[in-house]
Length: 251
Ligand code: OAD
Ligand code: ZN
Image (cartoon, rainbow, N blue to C red; front, top):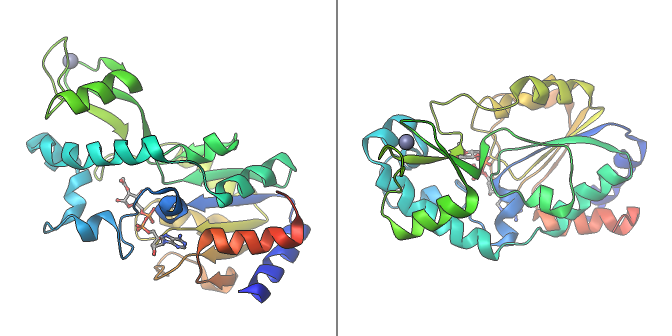
């Protein structure tokens, strides 16, 4: 890993326009489970076809499945703090080296670490809306209702409330800006993602720069332009970026 870290540090020194696509693996060290890792939500859910937890059609039929998992996520979020790697990418932006981040995560840990240009392609939980009348609910209100009721309902019309997370079957957010960022990047990081969910998994293919993938475990190569992958690091994200930082002394 040390040699890979040195190589990565050299690439960062030369780069001027870095971009990052991050996934759930970025936050497991903060105590938030990923989806497809060995301890992932989909593995532990113990139900057939676990992706239906975030399927919009299924949500309309039975919102209680999503909410039973959402309560656990909210508890984990309360205790979570940004990890070393989150701070590392925030420091790269402050140094003027990083253009922006596309994150599939809804935990806001990039922003809490100080990153400013963050596209939450799968939305977030900071606002919720009634699926019937569209009334907006802020984070604190929707969170309170999530713990008080099995299925939070709108006080205006009785409709089911849904956080602004992008479910399967819904359009992702900021897609043009995400591809634009990838095109402008001269160095593209993929960190903590299995790259199986589209269109997020297609974004790295838009960059003309070199790609570095840091992920423990399998990464789908279906959309990844393998000729541009300069480095594939199969290691713990925070351990790896600590090693990279040993050479760069950003933090
Ligand atoms: P996944 O759970 O599919 O992939 C996370 C990857 O991170 C796995 O390959 C893990 O092995 C790896 N990993 C976990 N912890 C790590 C660590 N400390 N160091 C290195 N690697 C680690 O998560 P995503 O690719 O983000 O969508 O999943 C994409 C989307 O699928 C999510 O945004 C979510 C989900 O359905 C929605 O909810 C809409
Ligand atoms: Zn309503």
